Length: 88
View 1 (cartoon, helix red, strand yellow):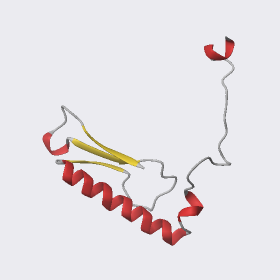
View 2 (cartoon, rainbow, N blue to C red):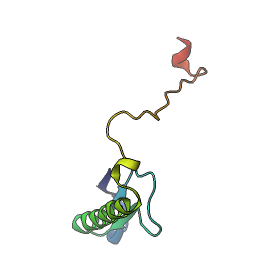
View 3 (cartoon, rainbow, N blue to C red):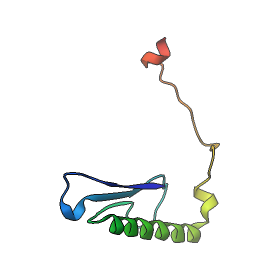
């Protein structure tokens, strides 16, 4: 779903980084990542955008239409025949 981490060496007002991932579609204007000065601010921004995405998702067809837990029938497993592991 996402993560929040501290980036050492970044400017003090942007040292906490947050990101949502695994989202296949999102409403216009919604951010899927950002920076914040404190952990609390990063958590608040993360939560706000996650909730915004869930509200938007409910409007466009529900959670089941985009996200399914577990294995997906759409998953393709590919092998690279040129990879060293394939030639062993």
